[in-house]
Length: 152
Picture 1: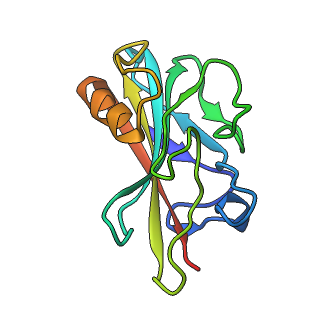
Picture 2: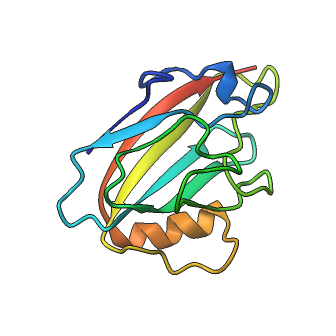
């Protein structure tokens, strides 16, 4: 599988519009070459450079198998169609953009798409991003990652 974005390149700078202090828009993401047995997708975003350990910014799940992209801003409250969104480490459902501590240096935001062998994840109502990722990892057929950089 391959994951790309029209908003940033792999190991490129995330635009301010994607940051928490900017417009807080999730970037546009597109994926190709999913395995034929794919039943759904999960999109994750995390910051492994956070001072307190991995900080989870987003988990969109139960994305239909016939989708191959999420538009810019899909992580907002008005996300299209059937996309379910977990509660991020900011304590809100949906996407929470980069907000590293000022002067903490460059952070690497890992966007991943997971192709899954199930149509729906068995998670409780209002799951946290960690819960979605743990359940999704049980059903992964393929995964692709794209890293965006950001600092304040």
